[in-house]
View 1 (cartoon, helix red, strand yellow):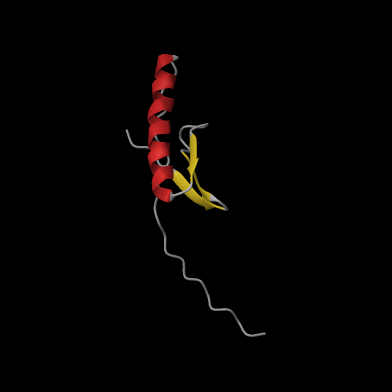
View 2 (cartoon, one colour):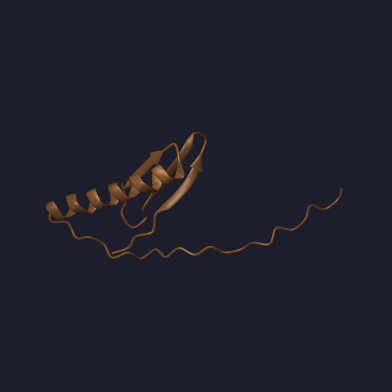
Length: 76
């Protein structure tokens, strides 16, 4: 099962969360470390949910990059 992890640059590193798994978060100094930590957190989160008899949600979020054309600043 694949879940989308959203990773954002913060003032002192990176933070990540999975919108399909509320409460599943991670943060670290580097992107790579954050990615690895959110992977571990997601596995642990789902394991704990299963142990408590909770239903594991089907992923509904899909990620796609879109290119945005930013207009040049106008002269004032």
